[in-house]
Image (cartoon, rainbow, N blue to C red; front, side, top):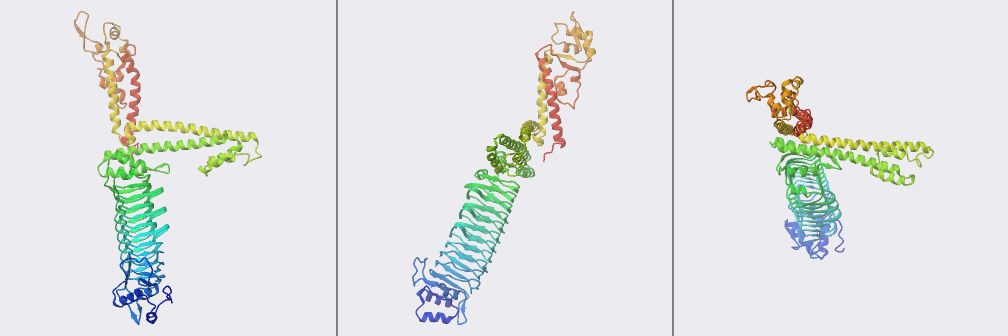
Length: 640
C-alpha cells in the first residue's frame, strides 16, 4: 500500500496493522497521539506547499478519527484539531455524525471535502487551501462554521444546511470564475453571517436563506461581471445587513429580501454597467436604508416597490447612479437633505421607467413633507410632478405620432422595398394593430388576386388615417401645452391657489394705472344715454377750453365764465374712482357700478384708446383667473 492508497478505515485493528507495518506517516502518528489525548495535532505552522510524509495525513484515517474511532479506540469529545497538514485524498464525511468539532488550520486539501448532511458540533477550516471547493450541502451544525482566511478554488456549497451558531468567512479568498464561489441557498444560520474582508470571484448566493443575526460584508469584494455578484434574493436577515466599503462587480440582488435592521451601503462601489448594480425590488427594511457617501455606481439602482423605515441618503450618492427606479418606493422617515432642487433632480431621475412616467415617487415625498410640516416644499414637489406628468403625456403622444409617421412612410414604399420596412417595424412593435392592417394591405403577398384599384383605395384610406392622427396629436399637444401653462401659472396646477389672488392683483394694478391716466387725460365719458344727450354734457364735451369734461361734469361745483362757482349738472352722478373701476373690470363676481357708469373714449386721446382695447383683455383674463382660482379653492381642480 502506498501513501496515496488508503482504504476505508472502520476498525482500530486496521490502524494498528498500518502502524506495525510502517505504513503511517510521521504526521499521521502525531495525529493519532493528539486524537488520544484531545490535543492539537501540530504538524506545521503554515500551509504545506509540498506533499511529503512529514505533513501528509490521508483522508481515510482522518475520517475514522473525526467520526470518533470505534469501541477499541475512542477519540476525545473535544474533537479533532489539525494544524499544518497536507490532507491526501477526498475527505468523505457524507451523511455522517462527527464526534465533537472538526478543526483544520493551515491545511492543504487537494481534493474536494465531502460533507453532505454532516452533523457536527462545529466545523473550522481556517487559513487553509482548498483546491477543489467544498461540498457541505444540508449540513447540520450545532455550533459555528468558520472559513476565515482560507483560499478556496472551486465551489463552496452550503445549500439547505442549518448552522445554529454563526457562519464566518472573513478575510477569505474564494475563486470559481463564471460559476458559484459560495452557494448557500436556503441556508439557515441562527446567528450571523460574517464575510468581512472576503474576496470572491464568482457568484456568492444566499438565495432564500434565513439569518438570525447580521449579514456583514464590510470591505468585501464580489466579482461576477456576467451575473450576480451577491445574490440575496428573498433572504431574511433578522438584524442588519452591512455592505459598507464593499466592492461589487456584477449585480447585487436583494429582490424580495427582508432585513430587520438597517441595510448600510456607505462607501460602497457597485459596478454592473450592462444591468442593475443594485436590484432591491420589493425589498423590506424594517429600520432603515443607508445610501450615503457612495464611492461609485455603474449601472442601475432599482428600488421598485421597496419599503424602508428610515432613509439616510445624500444627493451625490444618487447622482452616481446611471439609472434609477423609484416607482413604488416607500420610506417612512427621511433623514437626508430636503433641499427641493436636489430632491427634484432625484425624483426626475427615478420616476421614469422604460420611457413611462410614474408619479408615485413625487407623491411619496410630498406626503412625507406635508406630514413633517414642510408644506411649501410639498407643494413645490407636487407642482413639479404635474409638470413632468403632463410633459410625459405629450411625449407619449409624440412617440405615437412618430410611429404613425413610420407606418405612413412604409406604406409609400414600393412593394419590393415594403417587406423590409415592415419587418423593421414589426421588430419594434410586433403586436401593433395598425401595422397588422398595413401588412394585410401588402397585396403582393397577402392578397395577390386583389384588384389594384381596391388595393390603392385601401392604402389611401390607411394613409389618410395616419395623417389625420398626426394632425390630432399636434392640436392635442398644443392645447395641452397651453392649458398646462395657464393652470400652472394661475394656480400651480391646483396646489397653489393663492397665485390666482396675486394675478388678480396684478391685473387690477394694470387696470388702475391705465384708468387713472385716462381719467387725468380727460379720456372718459359717462355711459348713460340720457346723460350723453343732455345739454349740460354736450356743452362741456364740445367746449375746447375744457380739457377734462368728465371730471368737470361730475364735480359738485364748476366756475362759470364770470368766475362764480355754480353747481354742475352731474354732481349726483357716479363718482369716478380709478381703483374701483379696475376692480370692476377684472373681478367678474364684483360690481361696483364704475364700469356701468364710465367708459374710455377712443376719440379724445391715446390713453383712452389704449384702455379701450386693454380692458377686453383685462375682462377675459379676469374671468379665466377667477374661474380657475375658484375651482382650485373649492376642490373642483383636485390636488391629490
